[in-house]
Amino acid sequence: MLCSFAVENFRCLSDTKLNDLKRVNLITGINNVGKTSLLESLFIFSGTYNPELLLRVNKFRGYSGFDINFDSSASPPWESLFREFNTNRMIRVCGLFKNNGERIITISHSLENVATPVKMVPVKHEEGTYASSSMPILSATMTVKEIGEKKQVFRIVFDPNGMRIEPTPPPPPFPGVFIAASSRFDFKEEARRFSSLVNKKQEGIVIEALRRIDSRVKDVSLTYMAGEPVLNADIGISHLIPLPDMGEGITRLLRVVLAISSSPEGIVMIDEIENGFHYSCLGDLWEVIDEVSRNTNTQVFITTHSLECIKSAHEVFGKGDYDFALFRLDRIKEEIEIMRYDKETLTSSLEFGMDVR
Image (cartoon, rainbow, N blue to C red; front, side, top):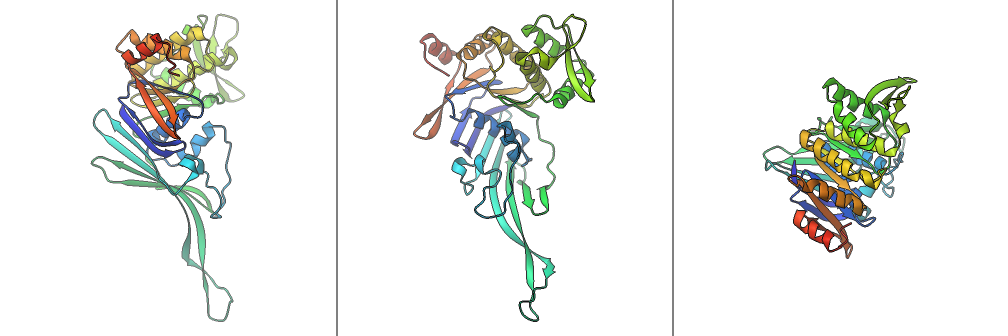
């Protein structure tokens, strides 16, 4: 579990640090201040060795694809991840763990023409002369350094033959899941996570959570429609109801519970947690997040614009050990500054009507 996290030169974040992290961390701030960017940098950090995540984070924002152009003036697909689109400055993410371990990841960009002398191409400029072939290579390099360990380097490479990652990255050291503010329900992925819980006889976690939003839910089961997996709810009528048909709140809660429960000792990032929930359900939502994350020892990072959401979280965690912190991001002269609220400072701010969103 992280106790601090820092990111440099990532999107709008020039030098941003979160200190004294808790199990559940809520991030607030006005639009376009970098809340989602902070979650994305955490997601890349959680993947550790996998540079393919540099492409995946843009999919969370709705990008369906990208063009590859080897011209030096063209934009690489990861250009927008670098602050002010300046790929000459490295991205740096650093996490300090509660066991005193530290991991530093740097990300750099390069475009080069690599000579391939083994593929000599005879060119008849004049008799007896030859020209060597060269291949343009576009790459992003991810360098990982941990205390007491050797530096590891991984690259995502594009050349005229296609894309590759070298060397093949190992699995991440801990699970990480990102839930975007708005994204299509991934039937296969959610079915996989639910099946994993069923195999461990832990599907009751999901059923009890959904009952907090809709008391009619008696059971959740997995069936197939046209060869595709579908999660269904039994609400006591003659037919099972596909969960997406029960509304955004139910499906979003399902995704939250499955993400946390399938990421023991890991990190889950949730963008705009309040989406799809009626304000009266927010207390139940936070109780579910608190309970499931505590049982799995999962660290959660969440963004919100909702004052009702903040108040509900403060109230729910105030009933226990308050393993919770709020971080407000503000833009001051083009720099992002962070205000951290603990139980006492958040209580005072809410009592005096101060805006902590």
